[in-house]
Image (cartoon, rainbow, N blue to C red):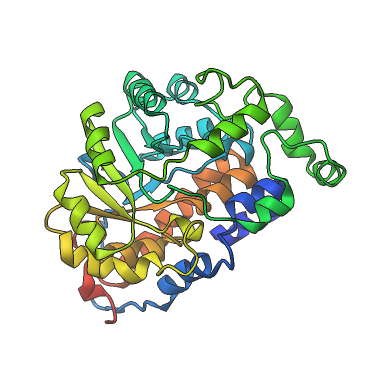
Amino acid sequence: MTVVTDVADLQALARRRVPKMFYQYADTGSWTQSTYRENEAALQRQKLRQRVARNIDNRSLKTTMVGQEVSMPVALAPVGLTGMQHADGEILAAQAAEEFGVPFTLSTMSVCSIEDVAENTKNPFWFQLYVMRDRGFSENLMQRATNAGCSALVLTLDLQVLGQRHQDIKNGLSTPPKPKPGVLIDLAFKPRWCWNMLQTKRHQFGNIHGHVSGVEDMTSLAEWTNSQFDPTLDWSSVEWVKKHWNRKLILKGINDVEDARIAADLGADAIVVSNHGGRQLDGALASYDVLADIVDAVGDKIEVHFDGGIRSGQDIFKAVATGAHSTYIGRAFIYGLGAMGKAGVTKVLEIMRKELDVTMGLCGETDITKVGRHNLVL
């Protein structure tokens, strides 16, 4: 039996238990994957100041994200096809996050629908929006999110066109998987995954299937989806979203100081420093390498959140110390979900909480809201 001590242990389990096409969908970047790798490396390069002989009793990780109280500065990031890492994956991850006291963000490209997650949780969750060419569909998505009680909208700005991810093409990624010989052989070695999938009816893009006219099967659904990402998305589109959404608005995909300044002036509640996990522009700067400059430029105007390469509580500490108000985890919780379902997501959160708490103490701090650049070796 595998003894799980860190997120890497859960990643290894997920690699064994999740079909290759879905594991690699989550765990690869675009083109050469240089930005994907650099996201983690940039955090690893940052060193911490060790402090001693300080009273570090009664430590607290509690803070807020866009006014919502959270047990630690972490939200679960939106990840497409989460329900293909484990049956009903979005529901299970949302439940784990709710019980832990951190936000869960449902992707537009989820397997479980907005309504599915709302029916199986008690507290409001967040919804991530891709603005499609069909603005009527996007407007309807926002209304459905409002009806479901979603308390924040995370508008993703960095996916007007898809960055090519080579492994998805090589693996013939599809939802559900196509019955090709190589796929069937892989599935034969993933009995736990197959059994769980047989127990659920959710195998398609739940937010789209049944909500778009003319989309009746997986082929037409895939064609519609691939044609809908909108290259005309611009700052005026953000204004359009604001007119249709009257709750908290978070702008995700900011990886440049100039864009951060524009975003801050639009009146959103937060921005997320992110390069889409290295899945879009390969060769872009690591998110952590631009975080300090963005915080310095707009941190007094808007909440700055951070996403990209977080695999431990120490990474969370480094981002917060650099000036991020809070952070997001994507691949890390996906590893836990693929490895152990809901229990795996909870395990990831527990691991990160302990790592963050111990790191904060060894740096001589007792309150996460007081952590800052004085804790870093600059």
